Picture 1 (cartoon, helix red, strand yellow):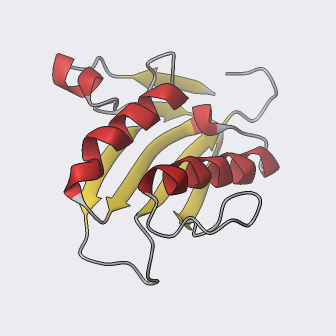
Picture 2 (cartoon, helix red, strand yellow):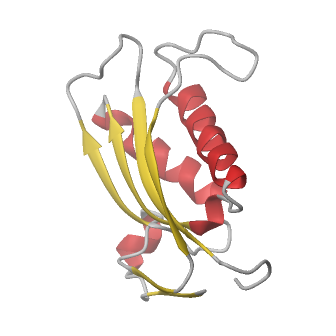
Length: 136
């Protein structure tokens, strides 16, 4: 699979997203919106933005691994957060997950509420996974 990230402006680099990701070949994986109210040990993380963000990315990675991919295969994500004040922190956390600077395209949207009390973030994403191992 061929993947190209359009060059990012300084602002886009600062916000840890790519303006566009172009793919050719590969399998497309459409991920459902992911949320988390408990950590990997079952501990309640309601209302804890940072813990939920870490857990949501871990769950997305788990799902992608079941399809033969990883977070590195994400090409776009739509991120919903409950409070705008967490926007910059989200960007910092995302930057740490893509240390090569090849970020997915992204939208960051503030919402007034989620389907369940205590939710602070939801991420929906699309990944494109190479059809052959090592073809990335």
